[in-house]
Structure formats: structure tokens, C-alpha cells
Length: 487
Image (tube, rainbow, N blue to C red; front, side, top):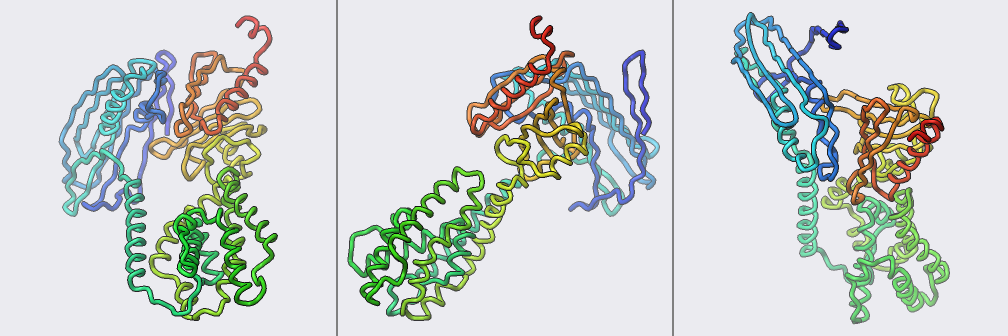
């Protein structure tokens, strides 16, 4: 790549030349490849917060001219010439496609028209942006006969729909298979309760994210109702199984006294301690940052009851039947298990967190990545950090160190972009706080040259306000007293 700077015009000109091995990528129509006017596409970015009452920053002035030339060594290629113009209040784009002497030339000329997008024109801007993205992407297909055509990609595959439909299909299969088994389920004469092995109880309770505990409790309350001809509601007691742990223990203790003449389960006082542990684990697991790890212990707390029922003199076929793994249980476990693993990894901060975290929560390899990519200075430490990414923190993040505020993101073509400001260079902040925890707060950092830097922050637990307050404190601490008085 060669770089030239024209001092009289301020232009920066880069020339890049490539010889590409394995250029063609398999496609259902043959082989294909795509070309993008990347710098132009990156200039017309999509805001993460679409519903807004503040204008969106837009780079201006910004003029970009991109020419892509593809030289074909094979004969018989044909392309139609094309000329197109996109003009709107936000930007202007000229596009020309020509093919001559086996060289395909893609020419794009882009100019921004204003330095911000009004809040009430975001939808109009996004429609214009979509058209620009389509027109600055050019795809060629190679068929078996070596002819070519162009193809525009309008939208990416909606993987969210595939994800939801897959889970919906798994749930429908589970319910249908369960209802079929209920009709065909054998009756075991002499069965007093619902026996299941300790291993299946613990493993299936974990894989079903605790749902099997509710079902096991429901089945045993149903057996008690049939034995006593009472008016209790097994379904309700199954749904609220933790609250009915002590009543179920007392019923089993009564059964043990009548059957064996003594309590063979555990002292009621010990059961009360276990019940408190279950209630605490249920409550804390929803509010503690390591709640999923605590959840791993919950099924074990039920084992004294499970073990007592399992070792009663009941038909062995009943225990064997209920301890078997059926197809529906395996399938639902496979679909639920990733959520369990995700929660465990998420709480160790190996995956991006949904809220702003302090720097000491980050692992050393995460901090090393930030330093290796020069996102933060090598001699500074992260004070606060937030990543809006879903799986990989390397694709998105914002934060502050002792002396800088930083932001990085992966653009539509997988290229990492970054921005950084020292607190001493910052003139002011503009903050648009989110209205709910589901939305993100927008923080605009403006330096003394008028250049802007945009950050997106989680609104969860109002930590965005703490983040902004710390930035304001650091700006003030790094601003000379004379400038503060002047302001």
C-alpha cells in the first residue's frame, strides 16, 4: 500500500494492490465474491439507540472518493455499465460501474451534507442509509460457463428467527411427547410416591434450570392427595415447591413414623435449615452476581427427601422407569444446557456483562487485548468497562482508565475501529440517559477541537450515572485551575 498526502488540498490518498489466492467462494449458484466501498459504508453508521430525543452526531465535512478495479485473467466476462446517484438531506453519493479491457471499475463518490441527524429524521436517515449500503456493495458470481452477473444483498439471514423457531419446535415436541407418555404410562401397583434416582434428579434439575424440581414436587403432592383424599392443589404446590419444602418434609416424616416407627429422613430442625438455604438460594440467585453458581447447589439440598422416597419398599420397576432418560428430556436438556453454561461463564466475566463493571472484574487476557490493540495506554489500568457485545468483548467496548476515556467497535466488515481521548483534552460531555434498563445511554465526548466521540453505556442499576460522574470528576481533576475559572 502506498500513501500520499497533498499538502495544498489536505487530501490523503492510499493505493492498495492485491493478488488473491482462492478468490472464489462457494455459492448455491456457483462461486462468488463481493466488493465494498468500506470507508463510505463506515461513514454512514447505524445508531444503537433508534428511539431518541437528541440529534445523532454525523461526521461533517466528510468527502470520500473510492475506486475499485478488478482485473480478470479469464476471458468472456461481461458486465452492464451502471450509473446511479443518491441525494438526500444527509449525504450525496455518485456510483459508476464500467467494464473495459477485462477490467471492472467500481467508482463511488460520497459527500456528507450536515454534521448531525435530527432526532425526528432518524427513520428517514436509516432508509437512506440502507440504500447506500446496498449500492456500495457489488457482488459477482461465476457460473460453470464463466459468465457473470451482479447481486445485491438486501438483508442478512435472520438468525434470531431460526433460533426462536428451533426452541419453539423443541418445546412443542417435549409437550407432545410428554402427553403421549402420560396416556401410555404404566401403573405400578404399590407405588406410594414418585421415586427417581439421585443422579437423574440432580442432573435433570440442573439441565432443566430447576423445572424438574417443580415437577418432582408436583408428582409427590399428587400422590399425597390421592392417599389422603385431601383438597390440596398439587400443581400450585409444585409451582411453588421451595415454599412447600417443609410441609412436604413433614408429610414424609409422618409416613416414616407410621412405616418404620421413627423418622428415617432427618431431624426437622435440620430440614428447617435446608429450607432456609433453599429459599436464600432462590432469592439470591436472582440478585447476586454469582447466582448461577449458587443454583448448582440447590438440587443437592432436596436429596434427603429424594433419597427417602427412592429407598422405600416400592416396585423396583417404578424407580427404574422414572430414572430413565427419554428422548424429550434429552432434547430439552440439550436446548437448555447452553443457557446454564452461558450463565456460569457470564458470571465469571468471560463473556460481556450486561452492566458496567469495574476494571478489577476483567481477566488479564482482556486487559492485555486492550493494551495490545492500543485501545488503552500500556501503562494504565481500566477503571470502568462496558461491552455491548453479546458473545465476544473484542468486538465492542467502552471504558475509562486513570487518564483516558476509550471506545472501540468492529464495523460491518469485521475491522476493529477505536477512539480515545485524554481527560485533559475534553471540553464537555453531552449525555442522553436511557429511559429503561433495556435501552442504552448515549455519552458524547467533545474535545477542545470540536471533535466528538460517542459511547454507549448500560443503564442497568443506574451505573451509567456513576460512570459519567467519574468521567466528570477526572476531567475536572485534569483541567488547569485557570481554565476552570475561565469557564
